[in-house]
Structures are given as structure tokens and as C-alpha cells.
Image 1 (cartoon, helix red, strand yellow):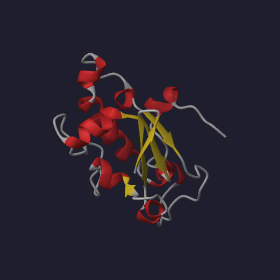
Image 2: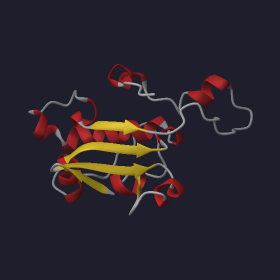
Image 3: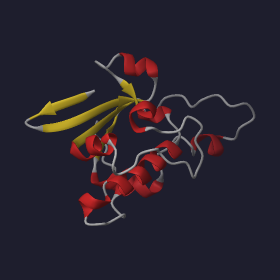
Image 4: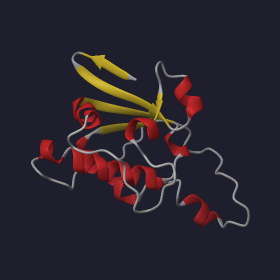
Length: 143
């Protein structure tokens, strides 16, 4: 869903298809940003700087992401790499700006129960769910 306020645009996505159904013309983050379904540390989104999606991302001032804690941290890392690449021309060639300078509002219950994985240690279980530490300095909690 694309919201428009005073000529500014906001994209609204959700992590799950159930949450996306609650958004008018909702899309999942995987569908909107071409995040691979099978994700690993080196995964990347299929977004090129010259396609329509790149233009939509460049015009958006805000990205609202519902149920964000449900996804693996590699999803955020791959989206970060894609945004940095796509928005490089808007940032004077800089690649050090997280998410290409876009504001992401991550919503959801960050205290929800972790997924059940048999015989998994707590530390190993928590790490894929939490937001990577590199983004920690750019995160602001709104209660």
C-alpha cells in the first residue's frame, strides 16, 4: 500500500500474509521488496537501480513494516544492502548510510515468543530474530 500525505509517500508492508490481509491492498515485505524466501547471510533482494520498484523506493519518505520481529535478521540485512545500492545516486555515492537513508518504522511485538526449534540453545535461537547490532545506533524505540 502506498500512502500519500502532503506529496510525501509511505509504503506499508507486513511480514506475513495474514498481517498483509489487514492492510488495504496489502503486500508482504517479501513480495514488495523481492526478499528471497530462502534466506541466508549473503542473500540479496532482486532490486536494480533502474527498475520501477527502485523509483518507488526512492520516492517513499517512510516505510511502515508490520510484524517485523517475525522475520530473520538476514531479511533486514539483504534489504539494507539493496537499499544502499539502489539509493546510492541519491546519497552522493555513499554506501555507508543504513537502508539508503530511508526511515523504517518497524511494528510488532518485539517480546513475542520465539519460534520452537527442537534442541536449540537460547542464544542460538534469539540471534536470528533480533535486529543486527550495526543498526542499533540508528534505532529509536517508540512506546
